[in-house]
Length: 473
Ligand code: 5AD
Ligand code: SF4
Image (cartoon, rainbow, N blue to C red):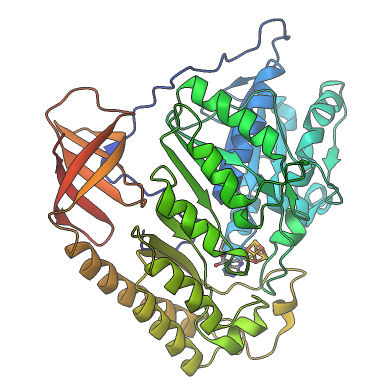
């Protein structure tokens, strides 16, 4: 999980190297709901974070339930959709280069849709730049998708969903989930924090929590479909504020979810340090089914930089949260996001970040070069750091993290872990999966048909990014 990503912050989704996940849905969703008309075919490509991945699963559900059929190639599609990311400039540029390839779309009878953060950020400007685009819709307007699709089906050429002034969350009758064993479940959308570098509050709108009743209803359905692991999602998942009268706290929701018959693992991401309190650690300590992994982005180890970033905590306050976890009765894996080269970041500030990493010894990090984003306060801050210097700092930081991970992983040799098996290698008897603490384990077993099951594996080797082992039970 050591990463300098231009691709995005898949804090949990780690590549399975040579392993291939054979997808065997416990209860495959019907492709077309009976009674709905047959429409065209759609191709949907997703950029960015897990929230986007899951939004795409829901968008696919909306399209399937209207009678569209999903295809895996652009050529076979009559409706091409991109669910986009604008967190860093490169991610946004990628979308425009993709859109540039479709000038012939109208003459081929194809429709093009732009969803997600670039759609929200650029709005109708997308029509000027790529006049062949038919749909521009930000994530805060997805609940209007059926209406927007009706307009397109009725022959309208350009439709938009761009309001962010909403208290709605996006709930669907049907979601076409990609992973047959681990289900995403969004519990809070949007973000009310105002980190000075970040576009998310603009592109995803204000924080909206789903009611605990609705979350638990969906969780029950997931358990009935055979899912055993759920991942609660939110940009600031632990800022969850139940709008239902029972006002369930986030930590209570974790514990209630863990007790759902059939559920074996409950995870959550991403946590914000400001709202990270002892009750969350207690939930992890007291219930084995609440996964012992916390993704708690620090962004910088320097208090002045944190202040300029408007992160709402100091280095010491952050380290108190870390101490709370490191002192827990159950070991908790901690991962983080770090930005290097924020405007005004001095060499001394950067070294504070390196020192913090040495102190915390993160199990994994995602590190990024600061990228100026439209509408954000940091965009116009003085003392921008040159690109080469950002690259240098990133390389130094990743090198340090590689050493930290190698040392930490070495200490795990001989230990047993429970692994949720999600991948099967092309190599005979080789499998892969995740531990509760979200480490990847590649292991050998002579047993057939382990996909989706939970097994114990003993670690007998390591790389910086994964554990290698063999099945014990
Ligand atoms: N530049 C670089 N990285 C960013 N992130 C968010 N905005 C920016 C930006 N403008 C990173 C943060 C965040 C992660 C999702 O992306 O580290 O936690
Ligand atoms: Fe962006 Fe900060 Fe909100 Fe995270 S907490 S989504 S970094 S504004």
